Image 1 (tube, rainbow, N blue to C red):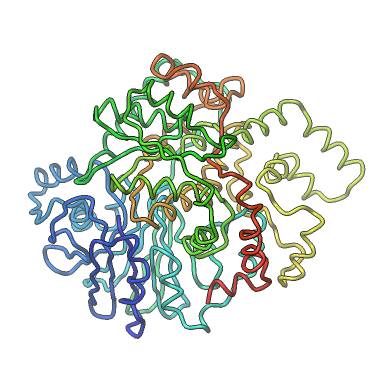
Image 2: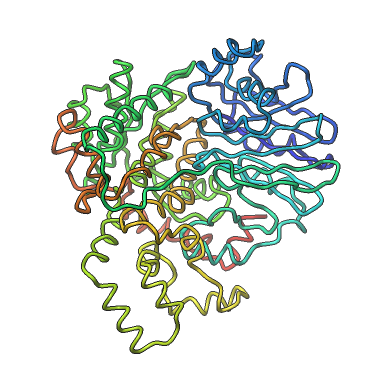
Amino acid sequence: MCGICGGNDIKRDYAGAIEIIKHRGPDGIKVERYNDVTLCFCRLSIIDLSEGAMQPMSSNDGKVHIVFNGEIYGYKELRDRLKRDYNYKFMTTSDTEIILALYSIYGQRFVDYIDGMFAIAIYDERSDILSLYRDRVGIKPLYYYYDGKKIMFSSELKALRFMLDSSEKKIDKSALYDFFSYGYVPDPKTPYCNVFKLNPGSYIKYNLKKNTIIEKNSYWGFKINTKKHGTRNINDIQDEYRFLVNESVRDQLVADVPVGVFFSGGVDSSIIAYESRSIHENIKTYSIGFKESKYSEDTFISKFANELNVANHLDILGMDELNEEIYMAYADWFDEPYDDLTAIPTYLLSRQAVKNVKVALSGDGNDELFGGYSHQKTYYDWEKRGIKEKIKYSIEKNISGSGLLKDVESGLLFYASMYGCIPDKYRKIQKRDLGLHEDYDEYWFIRENWNTELPTYSRARYADFKTYLVGDILPKTDRSSMAVSLEVRVPFLSKKLVEFAFSLAEEECNAAGEMKAMVKTAYKGDLSEELLYRQKHGFTIPHTSFRSTKIRGFGRRYCLYRDFWVYMSD
């Protein structure tokens, strides 16, 4: 894990930019220039702690150079195969060198052979091409600036913002409107024109001779089961799920530094803790609670930790932790508008865990893949009760406009309303104030990922996987943990588990519309009924923290400031 940045404009202060994000990698900084390309790296040492594993790293022939943020899982097996089949000579035991080896053999197709979380920049002197790659799901961030003349990239927006001139930081008003619609700025947009997030599972190739992007494409896709009912034996499905979870946890426990587990007492973190302990008996788990008992899960956390027989570190925090300083830090972590305050307890948990471990496993992703959210269940019930048909009839009778009818018919309108999209009465006002056309589609991000060929629950799972997970959950985990130099891994989002999840028919995954039905049944007997079927609680903070005069004043000074976004971006 680390931070990376670079580009082909030699006038930029790359050393200053990497210094700004050194919280992602406090163990060392290195800046190298190859022809007109500068590659920068700040290191968080996890695999191969030797100086030889420092980046930028070059190929054996010195013609290919890489900076890489993330981890490659199963890299030891890949190394053994490359040594055996290609007699490749490795100089380190790092996973970074695995990528260089694969690139030397397979070229751009190297990415087909790796699983992990990653943001990769490779400069190939032979072709004079700079390539950027992002992992399949979007676990690791990768931003880039491109104006048709030059390219720059970074792990975090703040490093790019530092490198850009004021004339290059033009605000994208449509992205601001999108934030008010979703609570985050959806990929590939950012707050700035000409600054983009590289989409998950995609790459770009920039030709230095032509100063242009010559290729931009996706490198990964998977088949989705469009059936409501499946033909597989449910016991076989459960066995495969458990095997894949165990395999992923085993792969992601590999590190040359201490590893722990985030533990909330919920189903997902309990599964990760259970599988981790089956592999490493002395695994440690980490939890937080709040003294305000209404928001504290400490009783259940302690109870379920005892059931799992794991050594749990539970820290009970006071209200003084939720002060103005942490809310200002929250704005700094994200660099752009982001409206999920569960990032704060995630940060506080990371801050506690990093005192003892350098890596933590998280349960993120299981809800999206296997239908664990209440809004997915609500949408399923809405369709089942036939409410959609009644609304359709009313629209047909009273309102003209086939577009609205189509959105109701597909379920998109109802599902989007649960995302917190802007109420009708405010849309025209905000569009007008931002200078957007009144026909601007606030549902575009959901619409792009709304697969009407899928049955109801599967449609909801896929939409959340492509939108909410990428735009909200994964950025929250990355920024909140990297703010304190903690690497967080997400075993549920391995390539195999994602492909398995969407190979299931609706009833195989969510029988009778039950949230995570298959998942819960798979772990019956190993996890208690109380743990499996207890009502889901979100990872939240006491709302009374917002009632203090101090915090209200902070909100007025910053969050309600008319030019807040521009202010924060300068």
